[in-house]
Structures are given as structure tokens and as C-alpha cells.
Amino acid sequence: MRCFDPTGAKHFCRPPQPSGPRTMRKLGIGVTKVARSVAEGSADFEAIRSACISDVDRALFLAASNYWRGCELLRVGSAHWAHVTLYYCSLYAAKALTGMFGVWIDEPFVVMEATVSLPGRQEVLVSDRRPPAGGGSHVQFWDGFYAAGVHLAPWVQPSEQWVLGPVGGDKRTLCAARNAVNYEMDIAIESSVVLGKSFTVGNFPKCLSGGLRTQFNVSEQLTRLAFRFAGDFSLSTAALGGIGTGATRWRKVRDYIVLSKKPRLDKRLLRSELLT
Image (cartoon, rainbow, N blue to C red; front, side, top):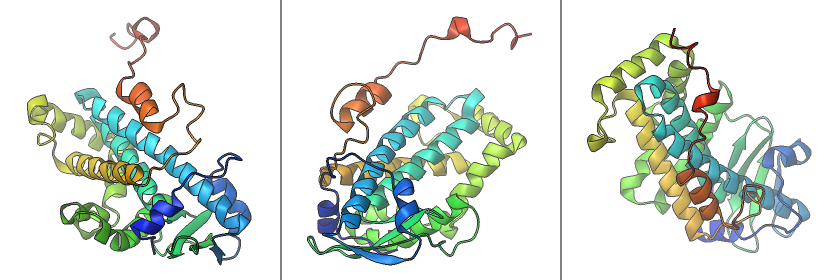
């Protein structure tokens, strides 16, 4: 999956059309029946660009939310859901990262890769093709992400390049671990056992082990990269406009994720029924 270079990515991430953001999935239904190249200067290119960077903005917010909430779930009773939540953090962060560089993978709705990076003459190839990975949509996304990662690697620090490739050389590691803890109850319970024996705040995140530690490390690094490039490219859209007050993404992340207090629902939740 070919990507823009950083100069091309910054140009691609400039503010979208004022007519309002659309989503890549909704837009893709109408433009990807046949694989085709779309050039900058055309209405289709601007519609695709606006939809893509608006979805990137959404993905950044969701990555931050799942990262923060996933870490709050690092308790014995919710270890399995911490793992699942952190997985979705990595998924959203990866979508945001590749989207800024002109790559979008949402089979069978829309798949896009950059073909010409030069600002003013950019081109993308869009289709609804299935990436050659087999498996479900998540497996196909990670297959495409790792293919794009080869092209992204030169633009990140050598110490960070590991997160752009498959864990342990296996493209299905993240999906398989998420599925296991999500759908197999004995593995979910075992994750609580393991966390209960090892977790200490003073030794976090080194106290994490196994698949949960791997997932945390991947999620944190992808989130760091995605937000760094979003800052470098000054990415800003109206896609988060309906969330509370404040015009900027960082204020929404601060107010509604980082500083947000959990609702006081203690008196409204089942208690005696659960403790009998």
C-alpha cells in the first residue's frame, strides 16, 4: 500500500471543504465500483480527501478514548475488556496514521492508496478490492496496514519502526489475541488471574505480561505516532464538532476523555442481585 511522503501528507491533511465532512465508507459506496485513479483538482479527489481526513480526526479521538479507558480497566475484574479496549485503540490509531498518508482500508467499501505525492498534482487509487489477506475485515485491515508500514518506516525514528510491522512476524497476532480473550471465557478469566498476580502501579507497564503487555505497547506507540503526525500536519476538521464545547481536538480529548469523571451510578446499578 503506497503512501504519501511527509510533504505530500501535510498537503493532503489541510482543512477540508466547508460543506461538511462525510465518511469514507459512505463516500466509497458511490466512487469505488471500479478501481480508478483520482487526481487532485477534481471534485472526487476533494470529496475523498475531505472524507478521509475527517475520518482521521474521528479515529484520533476514538484512539485516545480507547487508550485512556482501556488503561482504567486494568483491574482484576475487567482485565479481558482492558485488552479488547486497547486493541481498538491500536486499530483506530493505525487507521488515523495511514489515513494521513493517503491510505484507507475498509473492505469491501473503500480501499485507497496514494500514487502521486507531489502537492498540487496528487493522485490516489480507489477501489473496493479485497486486500490479499483472507479472513475478516480486521485481518484484512492489518494486512494492509503492515504493507503500508514498509513505506511509512522511513518517516519515523528507527526505535519506533517495530510498531509498523507484524508482532513476531505474524500479521494475525493482534486479532488472534483479541478474539481469544473476547470470545473464550476461560482465557478471559485467566487474564484476570494473571493481572491479579502481577499488577502494581509502581511497576506499570512492566508489570503487564503476555498478550496484554504486547497489546498495550502496540497501542501506546501507534497512538503516540498518530497524534504526533496530526500535530505536525496541523490536522483539523469539523468532524468532532458535535462533541461538547471547544473548537479543537485537543480540548475535546482533554475535557471528555482525560479529565472526564465517571458517572456516579452507584445507586442506580445492580448491587444486591450481584452479591447474593
